[in-house]
Image (cartoon, rainbow, N blue to C red; front, side):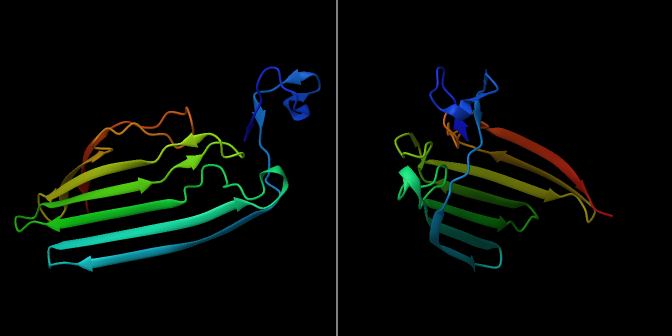
Length: 165
């Protein structure tokens, strides 16, 4: 997306004499490579942990931005989750998500900071057909951005009942 400032010298920011907020623009050529690692371990019969990591080298391969990182594509991302099944039937879990810094523009001069989010969850079966559950997303109420100056959810608390037939 290419935002149009006022006044703009970009000819595509004006169509038929009318200014516009911006327009979608394609990158002519890109190159991407990376590595993804994933693993899961059942530590005990009741405890399992899983994790993954992604390294992505995504760059423009043409024009004035040749060699610059693509916008809003983090170089590093990782997730970790642990789940535990208690002897009384309660199941609990925690998930941690890390997203590295990105750039908000093609020139790589505007940084969108890295962030880490923590989610927790629990569920408890009442019987074979009925289960209550709850979760807290962004449990630490982290302030973060995926796109510069756009809103993102704060802490969210959810709960409910699952019925199985």
